[in-house]
Image 1 (cartoon, rainbow, N blue to C red):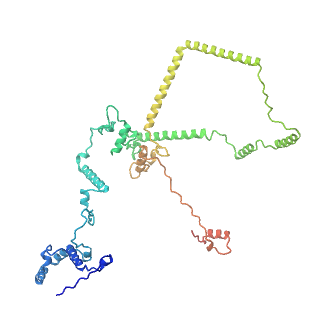
Image 2 (spheres, one colour; image 1 turned 45 degrees about the vertical axis):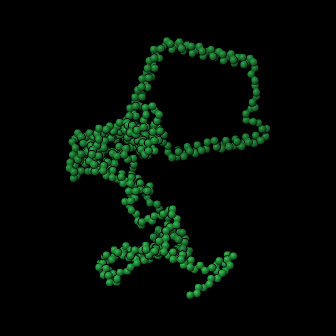
Image 3 (cartoon, rainbow, N blue to C red; image 1 turned 30 degrees about the horizontal axis):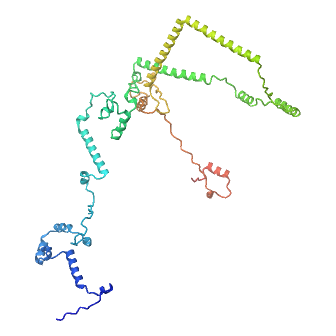
Length: 461
């Protein structure tokens, strides 16, 4: 067998290398790459190299039920995703590479709870723990029991509960301790002083007067009527006082006199005679030369004799004041006892005033507070006259209301602000008018008014 003679080609230039036959080298490299991708025959298992007989495969398939077949097919990847599966056996040339882990679809709540990574996971764990704590306290019977050994009115220092904030040497101030408590999540909430003492002496429920009963005794009913009369007398007295210092202070005049007085006030300084005199004065002033209203100021200097007399009078006045003060001192020494009595009387009056003001302030502390723009006023006493008392619940004339009584009690105890019923609010008037396109030609406004009064005109908003 003759072997083809290889051609001798000059390889001096780079273009000459392209004419070299390297097919055998490329075939060898291609086979090597294929083995790297697919793997060699020695590395493959027997299941891939050998095929079972057709009868045995059919028997195995027939042995599986439909449910088992669905489970087997569910484990296999989809055929549409076969192209994305990497079948290459080639090793990664870069040994040190950042591997990206593929996340599974959906959330694994249990894994997030066990190994929290995000702030919301930590917060969810805290909320969950707090929920279980509150649930424990709710279910625990001991937590429901009230600790009566603790004094709720005792003033406690927040620095005693947190170690390290209160020192004996005083290095940590109160402001610094407050700053620390705010940053460590235990802020000190300042409460109003009214929490530590009562602001009202009103009771939660005050029993009504016995005279308001549907069948009261004579003494109770008379006592209730006396209280009502006393209250009404105070109101009438106050109204009369207001009328006396307002309306009755001024003299009453008729409307004609009032108009004449007003006209006289408005005409003050504008009489006809004065106007005529002013016109004559203006004509006379035109002939006379111009003169200023005030005379010119002259610089009159005092003489030496006048200054000497003035200085002598000042010295005499000063000596007189000194003698008067000395005389008053001698008189005060003679009346030391009376001065001491005056000082004691003045100090006693001041003490009495202080006591009175303290008493008034103590009374105002327990009066109903002004929570809104209105002041609390005691409601009228519910009373039935003698002819309205029936003696039984069926024929009694009702005067009071349980709802109103509770509402007024809340206002008296500073729970609700004082308010008054405003009534039904009036709706805004809608201005109606006919459109220009709906008007007939030659119709005046007077005709439209007549149609509106008769009700034949239709309005459009």
